[in-house]
Amino acid sequence: MKMLGFMKKSIKIKLISTVMCLGFITTLSSTLNAQLPQHSYPLIGWQTFSGAVEDYYARFDMVITRNRHSGWADKLKQMNPTVSVIHTYDWNTAQSPYIDNFPDSWFLRDSQGNKISGYGNYMMVNLSDVCPKATSGAMANMRYVDYLPTFLTELVDLNHFDGLATDGIWGRTGMAYMYNRDGFADVDIDNNGVNDHDEMSDSEWLNRWQGGIDVLMDKLRAKVGPNKLIIINSGTKHTWGWSKQNGIIVEKRRGFFNDKFDYDWFNNIKKYAVQPYVTLEDGMPYNSHPKKGYPSKDSFTEMRFGIVMAMFNDHYYSFQDIEASEHYWSFWYDEFDVDLGRPTGPPREIRPGLWVRFFDNGCAIGSCNGQSQSASANDLTQFSEYSGPYFRFKGGQNPGFNNGKQFDSIDLHGTKIDGRYFGDGIILLKKPFIVVSDIIIDNSPTGTSPSSTLAKLSTGFEQYKECYVDGYVLSCKSWLDTYETAISYGSGTAVFRPTISISGYYKVYEWHPRLSGMASNVKHRVQSADGSQDFTINQQQNSGQWNEIGRFKFSNGTNGFVEIQTDGSNGAVAADAIKFVFDDYGADRDFESPNPPGNITIEVKGN
Image 1 (cartoon, rainbow, N blue to C red):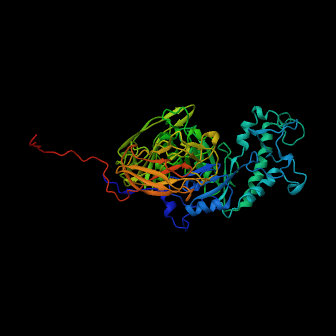
Image 2 (image 1 turned 180 degrees about the vertical axis):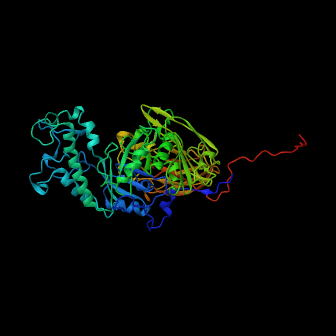
Image 3 (image 1 turned 60 degrees about the vertical axis):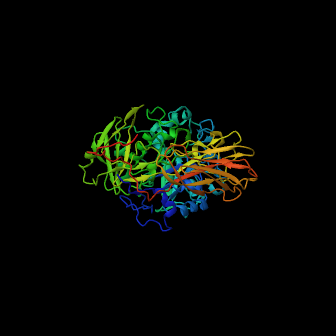
């Protein structure tokens, strides 16, 4: 079977014009209508607290971030004009950054006047409608919920950002749980010196709390207007605020607590949301999952399950590893580069626990009821949207699964752990395509692509602990062993060895940071299928970007590499990141063995 060509959705970063997409998501139930580019499925988004290089952010369809600088947002949109950039802020604790001259009366306190912690050292604010008002200054006679919308819309310029989000707001649903925990055993929202547990019922207290949030949501929507997104992370599937918000963030998605991937709940809540409906699934592995990868970024079964269920629910999706914890970094998978186009209909139930959804360019199948399922090509023909046959794409990260063959059947994993339902999924295309995401080998595991390992540094290199020096990084946190670069001031080598699953030509790029005393003559040795070649890189120039070394042929496996050598260098040497970009678009490839010949007689002559 011949591969028709190469598919890579993120290549649009380089090829797309500065003209925005003309098609927009259609309004269903609300007159409010933000102009969101009509992204192809799968929808790829990321909630992050900032720190990655712009080159990485620009891959995504949507980025939710604490970075509030207009120039940064503009740069992302120059690289990818269809990316939606949303600013996020924690409403529970009013931090990152703190509000200047924050009125002391706005903190949530107990009946003794002590501040109540939200998380760690961050103190909760009083989101209720009986929060005492500020008594002086620009915020005089205002409650926290009255002032916050003004602060949020002045914190960022919405001429450059596409909307606002919060990564922390506990409304009625969340506080119904929190209010009965030890940390809220004594709380006094009206500051009258009496524990609220002693003077009002739980429902009365929750009404007061939610009443303030309702005011906040009304004022915020009035401030941002109809054409900006508001996305809420409440930690729950809440039912409040939907007439003012576009969607939610499902934080740390690890399975579902029902056997139908929350489809009924989300399908219903969309009717009440401000359009376009925009929700992000923040996926990550579950520690006790039997298919968890080692390292956990290689948890391909859980990633596939998450992305297929997200497509069923019309959600954006990302996948981090367990070590990323609070969204410090996220990984890019071959499935993220598939271009399925738009849905041609809703998800269809093949049978209980097994679903399919059809798209312009293919379909996605997923199991969801915690049981293993078998799906066949014949199962798909019963639906009017069927347009087969379908093919697995030929992938670089998990080639045993994404093998490029015509789809016949598949066994999809399923399990139930701790009340959570897990399954599996597969993306199929109408035509056979190669999908190879860029392979990045970094000095840190956090920046290294799935299925590959980080650079091997000799003892002459040390990890550089200072952040924000334009090295390649997804998040620089020395306390998490994530570093921007490695530096050698003496003798040493650094080997960047990719795992190649599809042989062919790859363009090779290097990335180095801007630091004082860098060498101008750093040897880079490229070992390819054609042998070894040496190149000299001037690390005093062209920092903070991908610089092409050349185009080389690599065979399957891990025999190819790039080695940075310090010997003979006239200064410090950085070992930061190497990128391998598949560049065999026009190759006439056949990945299936021919049928064995018949009626052949073999005559052997000589010895």
